[in-house]
Image 1 (cartoon, one colour):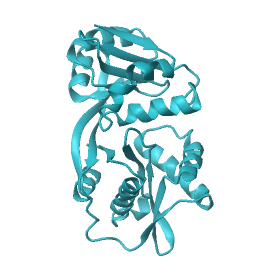
Image 2 (cartoon, one colour; image 1 turned 180 degrees about the vertical axis):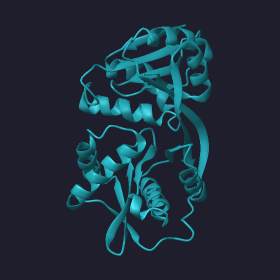
Image 3 (tube, rainbow, N blue to C red; image 1 turned 90 degrees about the vertical axis):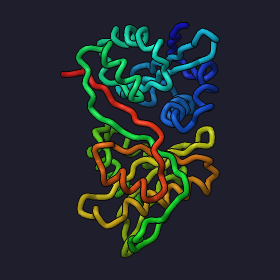
Amino acid sequence: MTWTFTHDVDVFLAAAGPSLAARPVEHTVALTVTERLRRSGAHHYGDDDPVLGWWRGADGAVAGTLVRTPPHTALLNAVPPEAVGTLADALGAGPDLDAVDADRDTAALLAGRLPGYRTEREHRLYRLGSPRPPSPAPEGRARAATRADRALLVAWVRGFADATGQSKSSAEWLVDEGTERGSLTLWESGGAPVALAGRSLMMAGTVRVTLVYTPPELRGRGYAAAVTDAAGRAAGESGAAEVVLFADLTNPTSNGVYLRIGYEPVADRLLLRRNP
């Protein structure tokens, strides 16, 4: 029973890819991140090499993974309790390890082994059950974003990054790539865009709704629910067997919206960050 680490995404996927694909709902982020590394190269997310790891249990099967793309958060999936101690030793050896994202139980075990870390954020993974359109529905309609929307989209993606504490450095790339894939959905009201939702690459039949954003001055009118519903339906129409999304548990409004339009809770995850 041991952890193995590599900087090579092809080596990682050869070993751990089937394990991730077997549970694509829970592993949605790890699947899309490693696919982006495979397509765009090891330094897509930053200048430092990625660190990719997997744990094999006594039966030799992969039973846990780590995906770390500095400077972004280290992502843990399905790590069994017996693997946490040795993983904490390996993670703790890196002075530049700023944050770890893990399911609630794993995060609790890690917090006991990594002194000086605190819970910064709790978020919930949802999957779409039976879609239910917003009621009452706001005025307007959904449409795919186009290149003509680029300036607005970049501004909104940056606004989303500010609101969620993420980096704004990739906003233009996200807009260009998403527009090319047709994966950015706008809700229009009165002939003008009022809300945005994006969709991830489809991996193992699963698509994640991302980048749900309404400008502050337009909130409270049902636009976020409408554009999220539209993006989820578009994912289904593109062939996705599962549609998922994450919500910050400190935001009861967004969690309530997702429940009302048909999303069902799957699991909670915690972001642990080192104290400054």
